[in-house]
Image 1 (cartoon, rainbow, N blue to C red):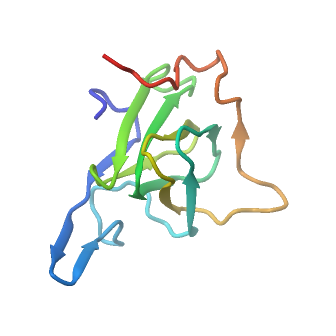
Image 2 (cartoon, rainbow, N blue to C red; image 1 turned 90 degrees about the vertical axis):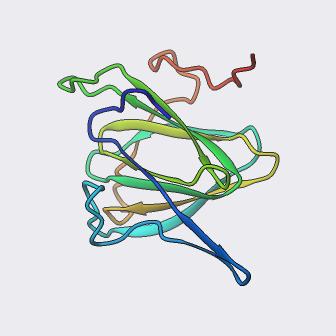
Length: 157
């Protein structure tokens, strides 16, 4: 878990309830007081194959809420907002089956993820805006750009 969070980022530990029938995990609720922006736009699923990086992008309007429900993901955020008190800060999170968290990613914060499990990992994203096919609210950089001070390589040691 990141020591200091980027301004506007919310991280919520999720509880998995298990019994002999299976599991249940609530991800997001309309009455959730921890989260800052739970306006409904859409919910979608995205996956990553082992070792694949899907980054960097941000949204001008949309807030994302990531939950990894299968496998493990390294989710990384970067604050490039000029007026932010956390400008230049990088947050790295390891989330998934073994570490169930929801990450609320505010607009204007770059984000991406890398599958770090042996099999395909799956993220459910609850967004505050619907995807606009004619004018997507996505602004991208190359995953290995020098504009963001982050190296996606595994950190051994």
